[in-house]
Length: 176
Image 1 (tube, rainbow, N blue to C red):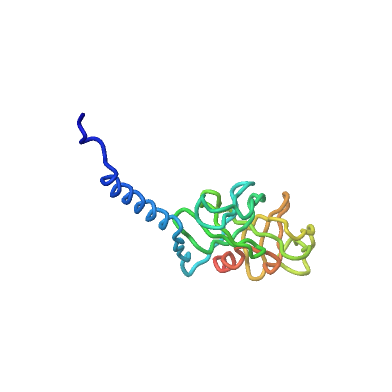
Image 2 (image 1 turned 120 degrees about the horizontal axis):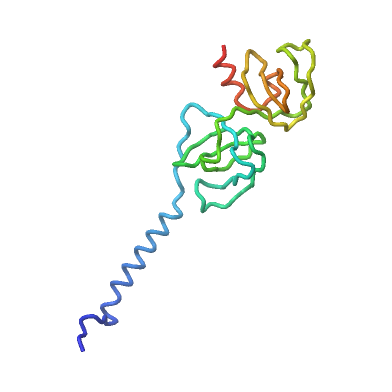
């Protein structure tokens, strides 16, 4: 019998040691924290594309889900990027990571704190069209001075920018 294809106990040790070393190295890379870069000097806004989005604790599918976000078009602030993952901040300050494909460029905002009056023109004395409850997501058209043009439930009108959470500052700067 040809013994060249069989390993002795003595010759198996280097093979097992090499496998163990490679395994340890692979595990150390797997738990190494990622270095996410800031999005630059510019933080930007997006909105959720789907009605079910997993908000994860880190940038990857292997990280646990912190929350399942169920409000399609909800505005989010992008604060960091890592490969195809974006760290977002929600209107309540909660942060987490989502895949970039789950985000949309649609401009939306969310009504803050209390019921607000939507008006026909950007003025406090303009006629009230309707009252918008806190937490309602609105389509953001443009912001001029301290007012934003919005759309909600088929209505269009103006609301003070301070009453909204979303990309109101960037909109205002781009229109002036």
